[in-house]
Image (cartoon, rainbow over all chains, first blue to last red; front, side, top):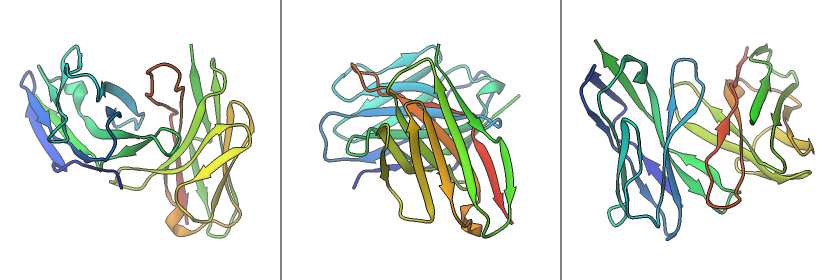
Length: 115
Length: 114
């Protein structure tokens, strides 16, 4: 079974600071994809960043970057220069290749950015 | 550009009543389509996925069903709702050509079963 674990149910960070959200996963596959999605209070799911397992270089999208440790099966998200608009639920997700490439989600981390 | 629609946005239904949620995608052809459910304070659970017209795969056995009558239309149904069916239902689409596997989500339907 493929599982995704987010061990931090809630986190808080001050505006302009940096925060790291953790995610670990378990899979027997060698080629796969990992994602971070953001769900603000509007509940719209928004893709934040994507990482291909065969790429050693960590993905970066503006203020968002990942630390991908394939051997450790770890996929953390770093948010730099946090902004109030970053307040949201963040979900780590893994491609479920034997289910039509459906996403297998962790339970999420609720991030609050304070002034 | 591609867009995805879901309706209704909000629904309150009594236990035992039928359900029909609709999802349509514009701007792409032959997408993979997905239904997820998010219970209060929890992550997303895959319910159904479809890789083509009339092709439905179920991940969780329950009283819900799905259909794909057209390439870009995905419907979630139930004949008799249970209290446990309450939640936030999200439809998503993706293409798997090349190396792109990200999914794009609709705005969701909030279902309350009373």
